[in-house]
Image 1: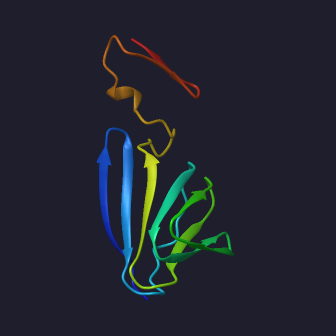
Image 2: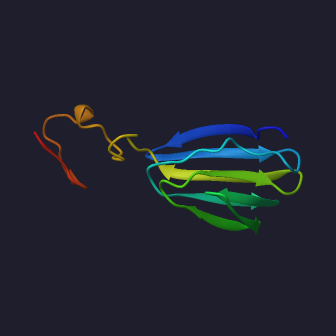
Amino acid sequence: MAYPETKITCATNLWLRQMHFAKAGDANEGHKHNYDHMTLLATGSVAVHVDGQTTNFTAPHMIFIKAGKSHYIEALEDNTVAYCVHALRDKDTEEILDPSQIPAGVDIIKAGLTKSL
């Protein structure tokens, strides 16, 4: 077993991580997020392990990952490619922007975060 080869990019407020699983059995490291996100399975097939339960998916497929759920992805066949996709967010507030980055003259009101300058 090996970790997938990854490439990460950001565009506007979108974060993408491409994972290329060269061999069946390769898996990413288990983790969880404080936000929901999608994994787009482009080629191959995977087992998605969530809090000790497993579901298999075959490409093409969109896979929903719920916030707060420990999960990892394991390739079931060689040359499997998947993409994790989510908005750029602050790890504590889950907001895309840190209020300290907002210049005077910009108002935002989102999910309990209010800043008016």
